[in-house]
Length: 140
Image (cartoon, rainbow, N blue to C red; front, side):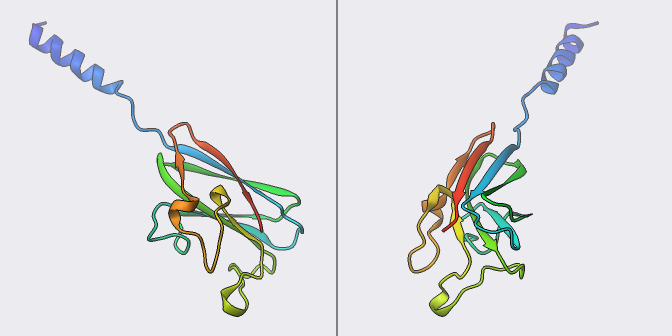
């Protein structure tokens, strides 16, 4: 076998072992659930433009007291914000009253505060590393 063929084979074999970017797991525990009515709705957002109305990934779980844990698989490492709410009446949306004030419990990653509307993306954003992340959201 010539040196060029051997070198080509070694280079090709080396390419097979190049590490591939690994998708992360994001574990979200929603705490402060006071009843078993309805469902817990959780959204994962990847940009300020989409937050908090158009999630990248969304999940729901049957409401359980005092907390529920949901897992997002195959999340590319990066910056994300998470929102959650307790859809007590099961209509699939966060019900609001006068002036858009939520009637159902809600919360955001980093316990970002909602004042006169939802928080901005940067206040709720967390960095998701390749090894994944676990976070807690406290419903208000």
